[in-house]
Image (cartoon, rainbow, N blue to C red; front, side, top):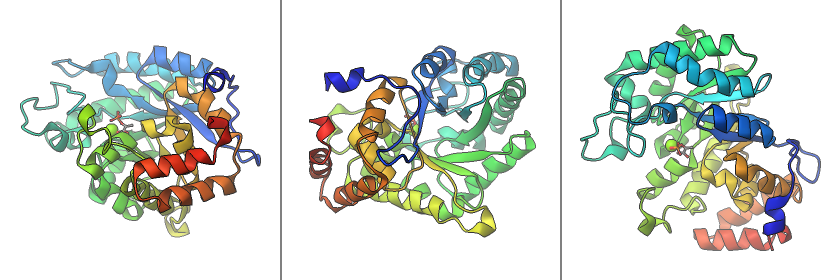
Length: 321
Ligand code: PEP
Ligand code: MG
């Protein structure tokens, strides 16, 4: 394990058969982005914009937002940066858009749902992102958190286009979004699966409760099934609506090397994780072919529970011994 963690990573991630793999970083701001670029990330798969404004009681101005976004884009000039619009609520309260007295915040007005009461906050944020993107060399894309229906995806894509941001996607972190992925992909250009929340909502287990960590496990059969369905919707998107669409994973699951293998085998097209995890994941991916990934994904899906799936896949990856 020690040896694995110390492997160097130059940014080129491939499987043993030469298949390229897009390994991206999750970042919360400029300092993270600089570290991620140094660590060899091919781009940013999740920029958590709310991290800059946690606890703030007033909406940051467009200029203040620009100042937060621009350093992230500059750290990845010429490369992809996926910006998530404010994911306010539950574990990330932003008092200027969320009601912190809600009885059940994880099921409340959070993420994209805050546009019901404060639509102007999204419009201002997209303006700041568009300005910072225009002044930088990064390939900036935007995505919305906590999307539950195709109608929400459509509304997000429309507001993005009005802001001059042509490439828009949504996160899949609610089971309804995974099940509606084909319809959602008729409205947006890509999907990014947030396995932290997708696991919480699939298993009905609060992600912040250590006592429920056994349920809150992305190796759970039902979670893997939803990932597989979502990836399939991307691969099978009809030519009439743009053809195959990228479907990434940006939850912590991508940082588990054995699960990263399974996710690729389920058809996921990119993996985004904390930059620290990149070398270890890249090292394990170099030991498997695309066929191995598909075989191990089938093995995981055939297992009855999370423990069995994890054990079966790990037993097939000698590099993890
Ligand atoms: C997720 O839910 O998996 C995700 C990536 O978003 P966050 O952890 O910020 O909720
Ligand atoms: Mg989430």
